Amino acid sequence: MTATSSRALLVAAVLLGVLPGGCAPAPAVAPLGPPPPVDVAQSIVIVDADGADVDMTAPWGTGKAWTRTLTGVVVEGRAILVGGWGLYGQQHVHAQRQGTTVKSTARLVVFDADCGLALLTVDDPAFWSGLQPAAFASAALRPGPARVLHAAADGARVDATAAAVGDRRLSGRCSFPEVKIGQVDAKHVAQSDVIGSATQVLGVVAGTTNDEVLAFGPSTLANFVAEAKRPTYRGVPALGTPWQSLTNPVLRQELGLGPNDGGVRIVSIHQPGSGAGALQVGDILLAVDGRKIAADGSSDDPVLGRLPFHAAVADRNHPGDVLKLDIVRGGVRQSVSVTLKGWPGSSDLVPWYRASGKAGVYAVEGGLVFENLSGEYLQTFGKDWETRAPSRLLDSYWNDKFDPLPDRSRVVVLTRVLADPATLGYEHVHDLIVERINGLRLQSLDDVHLAFAHPSGGFHEVTFAPGQHVSRIVIDVHEASTANDRLRATYGPSRP
Image 1 (cartoon, rainbow, N blue to C red):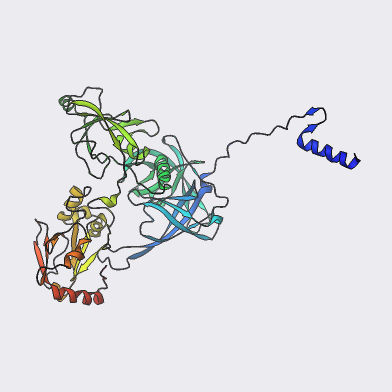
Image 2: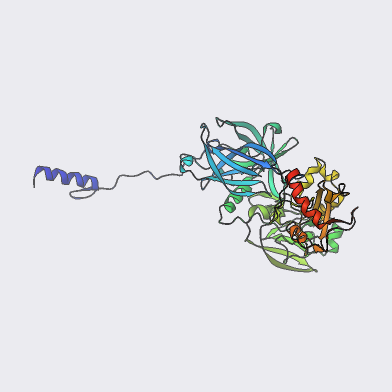
């Protein structure tokens, strides 16, 4: 063996940890620990959006254009979480990293218009280079110090303002527990600003009310992100069962409840809710999945703390989960199972946001303008719409809004009459609930064009719901047809 080959074998033996006469132990390697926590501020990105709001009084127009800058927080799965309703009506969305001027096209993954939460992504891999996702707080929030993180519009920095987390309160359609942020001037806080500790997201601002800043809590945000990443977003579960507290001792005695029973009484069942088919009006709900419900409707949750039971159902569960409900029905104690399902506001008889269908958001025939009743339309009556809007419309909104009827999935309103010879004498008619057109009972706005395609003789007849100041109007079929062409040139409404 040559000297050169001997040296080569010795080097190989050293590299392999093998020496003549036995095996040398491998050098100790320090175990890899968990990665250091990420400063929440480093996970903040800037989200720019533009769009247009539909003018509900003239829905064929382009609407009022807007641009908005929102604070986004990077979460697991190369996604950006945005809070509030700032993306409603968006047309283009861009994301921008701190300290850069490059705007990357962002794609909307899920926007829940009911709860005001959105998840975005950016398809350009370069955007994500070096970005680390933020972590949500896992424990129940307690009042204490925090900070509000706000992305500057120019993307040059993230402003941090000292804050304090306050008590929860329920707000919003989804009954999400929201965190009250104190010691911050609401004028300097915007939708989607991030509430955080040094290394955890404590909340995302949903909106401001007077001097209060309200933010979605971390469990709400974590559940939304998990649900939004599914192939099909299922929404937020809700029992859909309004209830009555049972704190009066005489009432409890009459219902056969003991002093330690707790429980609330189910007073109605909304058909789109998860409780339909399992619960009945008059049931006494004692517990959900073993968690007792107090007589005031509150329950103790191991993660969320004490809060109304229906908020815990929405906040800690997903559609498809099965809950065991302990009830008293007709004096008999028993258990029923409920499979949770999402309840999108778009399924309401009177949804909050404009409800579109095959006909779009409006229909125009012969100078008559029809729209589905919605909360957005009611807002056209001003800030005091709850008192200024016609009572006939408010009655439908307050009393019937949640439950589609067997013969009606939407409330169709004749919102205005355009001036034309075909509509002479009807200029004062507006904001009336339509029941039938040419004898066809309307299910929704989609039925309007179908009804006008089948006139009775030479006239179109529009019949309104009883109790309004006008019972019906009639227009000439030929005049209505020519009016569509004239009005298209004058007002610009198209016929969807």
